[in-house]
Length: 145
Length: 243
Image (cartoon, rainbow over all chains, first blue to last red; front, side):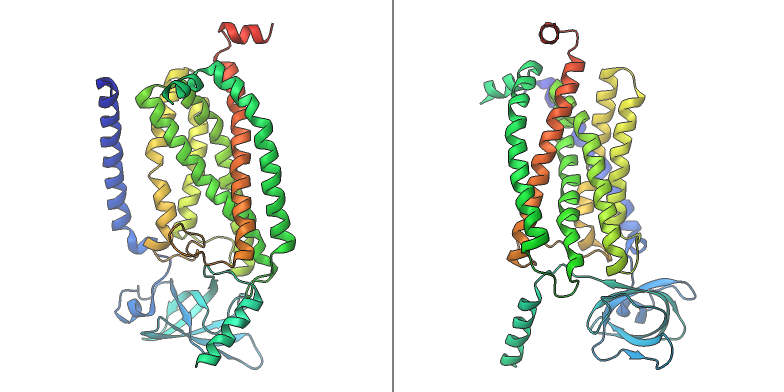
């Protein structure tokens, strides 16, 4: 390679490396602000801000959803399969909300394990399949159990 | 091989070869997007959870892929321009910027339209969405810088440096869903793992991605040809062309 070009390439690589490291440090320092939600385990460990609005993420525990008879009030448990947080919410739930679904809820802690939500978002996973395949999978699972 | 590349890098040769390539690419793009659309809207089944609403991925995923691919292409051109001083690289970089900006816009808009019914919100400041928005601003920055500096050599150099430094954002977009907790789901198609999507839905999606890619090549070549003519307007071969 021509020495002039080698020199220019070296300059560029050094600049890129420097900027990458700088951005890496910034992102590392901000990691908790970049995370969109806290997991139940983090809340139990006391990492979540108290008396502040934040988001909690996890799975809706199977069979934990309880609807009120006459109003939109709903209560359910968000779990990361290690710890549970009880969530209460008054409002319309997204279409994908169901047992076992990943959710991100925004709100505040009212007590140790009690979370009052002002917004409930459903988290979709990266899996796409036709209903027939889903039924076949469920059947296969049932027959092996 | 090197002789061929050097020939291609000459503006005149590029102008001619691009002109010959465009009709072929157009036919290919019509085939790929035609099959992709047929597969996306008619042949592929509805999703088990989202029903028909998932079909927006056939626009969203190719747009998002292209928005990053075009940026990498521009970064490669920036490197060629800064280190090897290849004039044609600046032409391709200039021609690609606005196309990339549009694909970024399309990815953000389609994602937003899908997000409202599925997640329950149009927008959330999670790492994936924010870094993609920054990509959009990078594209706009390159376009603005290009039009702000009158001197051609200066503007090519300045925008090449901006593109190169901004390319750090590309791995951040790609890995954002693994490095941080995000509302956006992980990658459905990955080179290493088995795709998390049924084959009947996957093939139209791959066809759409390939089709969008060829479409980008077509539009880029058309714009690059115009740019070459403008930059070489004082050379004899261009004057010959418009005698």
